[in-house]
Amino acid sequence: MPPLAPGQAAPDFSLVDQSGKARSLSEFAGQHVILYFYPKDDTSSCTRQACDFQAIWPQLKKLGAQVVGISPDPTASHARFAKAQGLTFPILSDVPGESGTPAVIAAFGAWGQKSMYGRTYMGVIRTTYLITPGGTVAACWSPVKVPGHAAEIAAALAGTPAKPPKAPAKPAAQATAPSARATAAKKAAKKAAKKTSKALSKGKASMPRAGARRTSPGGRTKA
Image (cartoon, helix red, strand yellow):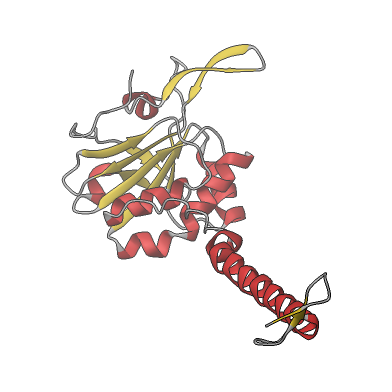
């Protein structure tokens, strides 16, 4: 089943969280919900994703949003994971039934074929939904790349685009090159002027004064 598209109604569900309490999507009506599906507790990427959401949890609450995580792990695993990582938002257990498919994860299009080391299998496709206070899908990310994902969700929730990387500043050499060339040219001109001045002053001593008489090759003097 493909992921839900923006504008579609998010299906309601009831699952148990890490403390054993039954939680439903409808209980968060009136709030934005960041609903994310992840493969497994205590794996590196899933741990980082959960901790990234926890780190910006205060900011998300100020924006009127609730974070909810869902994976196929049992409640006991979620309890250990939440305690170890200090998670304060609910993580729910969608344990697969007799069919081997977790019902809620599949309903949100986050269950599908995966491959690893040449082996193909069915599993959770890391997926995140931003659900509106009215219960419809505002946005969907699938498959999710963990680095920077939580910040991207917060930016979408705040209605501001994620900040693009800053453009590299122009090298200082480029900015100052013209003035440096001008300074060098001035110095060269000064140096040349001094040399010319010296050369002229030396030559002046051997040059005849204006109006002085010069001796011609024949011995005659010329005015």
